[in-house]
Image (cartoon, rainbow, N blue to C red; front, side, top):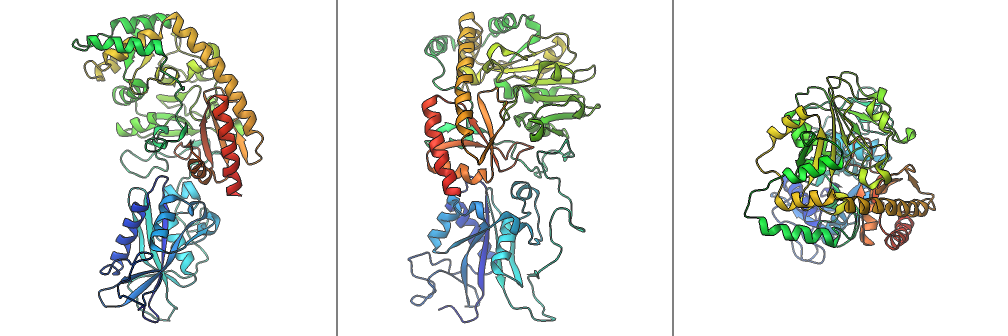
Length: 554
């Protein structure tokens, strides 16, 4: 039986997307054990409790002193109330879940603020703020924030205030000055947002303090579930049959070491360059690692929002990275003047992932100068009809490095093939950083095949078709008052803004569709999603699902 006056515990929970019921339960149990309520464990909903009949119908935990505490419920930010991990764990334990608006939680003073939840939700610690808010005035934080990979948890209880009391736990009284950005006396955390010109984010590598998960990519959205994939930007129905046959035939030569000379020559001819200006790589991702490790740079700058792997590779190689954040109100378009003059490496995508903005070639070219490497990620340029604004093939710009990928148009993500185009001296630097035989024989055969006239004509036809289907998707999205698009999209994907998009994304998953979360891109937050362009029938089904998801959100 729960003792009269026994403490009522309020458990604050924060989760990242994908957190499971088991992860939430494990961390909640760990936090309760730390509070001394562990020996009898939980009496889960519908099961007998620690003391037999008469146990409180919710969740009961017993301490070593023979007393009991009642878990009143879970508390979290309102957009996460329906998260499967939280909802499942609460149902398993027979407790309710209470959600509070992020704006309300932002006004709760927390002793252990973090940059990541502040950037994502405006709340410096969802778990601590939600626990304290649920416990009410005079709440004590019994267990401060505890973290696992995708879950945070804190426990608060309400004990009436007694003057001159001595307590072993933190007493959190109502405060007039909490951890709220801009209030006097509160610490500063740089918050990525779409109105910043220059981010002072120069924290070093391996600190674990970045506000964005730079290693999150679209494939994680569909890895473990059968969903209609709008998260990955690989063209559907690829590779084509003729390319599959060429790759399959190459398997007869696997006993020999790879010889990249023919593929290298084919890439060079396709861009009207000498082979010394071409480096074949195991996808564009390898090229980013090579650049980070091999180039003698000290002041790298990455233009965001864009593909996050370049910055991740630079940080892993020990570099401090400065960010230039393009602004929504400017259409996410580049202003070369925003790039620091002392930058000796500048990385930008064109068309940019995830904004789908195609920057004018001459605007990007204006960033080139002696003593600076200018790296342009053109992984999606072959999805632009005529490849207008491409810099591949240019030899008049000092320090230019153009990266291309065969992954997206040809459906070769699992084969890993791409290439870099640069000055011969730069190619030599990168090549020395590569292991022997970095590209497999099947990948080399695919690269050569995709440089043929017939293949280039097929890619051009696909680019025109993508443009038509993208226009249909944008027209459908324009019917929703809640949706704002980056209208100048030129790539095989579009970027949209919806208030509470993270919750909408979870509802879309329940309806069978995977969309790419936007909050892992510096310069964006939880209100952004990226959608791959698909055929008209798929788009129509998605628009119907989006309508349902928005109705549920309303």
